[in-house]
Amino acid sequence: MQHPLIVTAGIIRRNDTILITRRPDDSRQAGKWEFPGGKLEPGESPSTGLARELAEELDLPVRVDGIFDVIYHRYDWGTILLLVYECTPLADQIRNLQVAEHRFVPAASLLEFDLLEADRPLVQRLIAEAARPPI
Image (tube, rainbow, N blue to C red):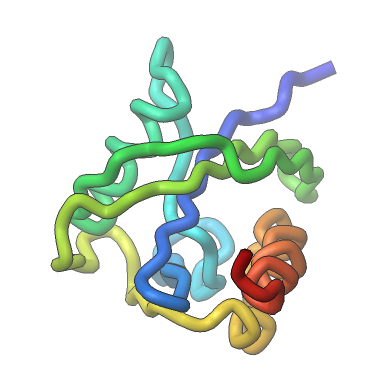
């Protein structure tokens, strides 16, 4: 049995919105939206890999905070284990270096985007959290 590919993603918030990015036209699942992140390099920790991916894709330095969720998903090409972290951006500017575009959207609006299948379970949790009154 083949081991799942370990992939990371970041939940990056700005006020009451969450960052999503659209995959480039020359990538697997081109045009789909996702929470930004990517594959780990050999020997790389998940938090280090996520910080590297966000810098490479968006020129965005972040502090990788606690784990938000873990998702196991089987695509037709293979299986992934998606480690999703809360991230705090350390800069205000974002540049689309390895993504087609990015948007900050309210949680409820995430349903309007064609998200990667593995990212979809996160949407319901984010919507539920956004609807919860503050303590």
